[in-house]
Length: 356
Ligand code: SAH
Image 1 (tube, rainbow, N blue to C red):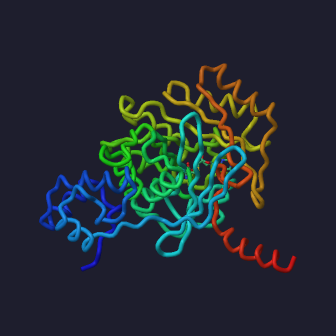
Image 2: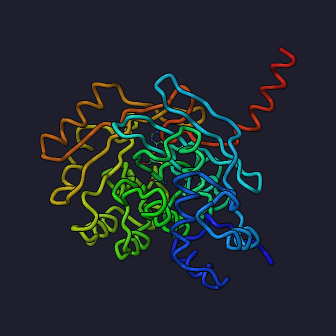
Image 3: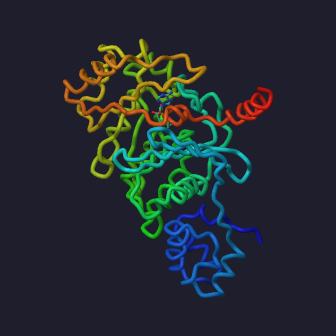
């Protein structure tokens, strides 16, 4: 019998699998508690389960989590984890302390297919989707390594990948992370950041578990946006705004619009006025993200004055705006700086070190 990876299952799915194997459904909650709250992956140690159930579970299920290949600590306390998956592929996940809450930034894909012009992950292309268990597994590993299992934390799907391009696994992960018997992260503390895949946003609007939605807008006109975010040709700005308007307001709270500021490209006062007009009447907040530069990314970060001026135009027009502080830049853990083809480089680096 092939074993099932337990962390792939929502509690409802686990209940069904248990019932299939002649075990009581309610054991699923106990198992969730062991795996997610206590970090126990050995069924033999789950002492509130009957001995017979423990061995039956060990036969049917596997519990594996990604392995830490590398851990970098930034001078600002941000930590970047390079995690190895079962097939040897790698993803990065980032711990951002005190934002004011502790936040885990996790990946939803190995690489990304969206091709945004200023993002380093885009240069990898899409290698593969992560499974729900691999997405949740990143939180398990980071929470364990940082001893934060029992604390309150936020989760942002802003690592590598486009979450709505891997819809089912992403939503499966949201359900598992929000489960009251597991990590019990309130769905509003989980932010799903998307490039703006309109049909998927519409699907999300009908979910019973609803994460906080952030949309990467980055430009106020289709012409500017299409040059930065290729998928804008398929889903232009008006379609995204329309999808936001249709999103059920009572359940989702405020939508965040992310806007990467690129010097001389989308950072002028005219751009700011257009952006303000675009979001007029929508219950949103704008998150300005000054570009985090990287080698091979053909853009520059605007000056602080320019960033401030842009923000001022928005707030004068009644738009809630904040500038995202970039964290962990010294370890390449900031937005848009995650890419793992660097592994090859570090092998080369080792060689260079040997000869150096
Ligand atoms: N695919 C998702 C998640 C991407 S990462 C999305 O598009 O929303 C989260 C945010 O970081 C996105 O808004 C993304 O556009 C932004 N980002 C990407 N590269 C960046 C860079 N070099 N500097 C600053 N922000 C960047």
